[in-house]
Image (cartoon, rainbow, N blue to C red; front, top):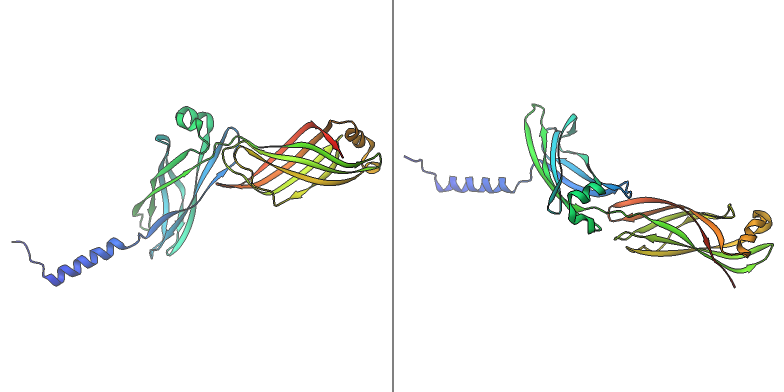
Length: 279
């Protein structure tokens, strides 16, 4: 004969079950940020930075994890890792872990044909993390995150030319004009531009510039530097370069910029011959 459950007891059991269903798990793994590190023409590393939050009253340790990373509809990588030194997560505390995924473009395009024509392929990371308490009892917490990553096509900075309002053997009132070119399919947002300009192997300008406009995908942004030059100080060869254009100029420096995956530094160096427009 099946035992009878009194209505009041049944209500209490249902209430307890409902409360348990609405409780947050003691261990939560949440995505803090996705960033792309060390971009080159050969590849890039996408880093998932995760926060591990322990709301329980006992310490836990991350012992191992596994994940699959899928690009489009294709599995790109499958990984299982056991940590030699588990990462402790204190009771009512937090810890952090970074999961780097390296994309080598040649391998990516061979394995995932659809990625070759994209500027920022989408991806999904799915797996789990296994935690142990002090008694080595284990619990597995599933993880699932989505995102995208850049197909980096480089960066270019160059010289447009000079505009001379006054040019004599003694000196010049002249403006240098440069350009920042972005061949990528996504925007770059400059923080600062550090530059050094050489003419006839002499440095005629250097400094750091801020407040530059965003460089659109497959676009460019110009910049200019006004100069007052003393040829008696920097040398006759610089005057001759300006007086007999095109002038040989070398631009060196570094652009620090934000993009959709954090920030990056883009060094550059380029030599070319440019016009000198005399006004």
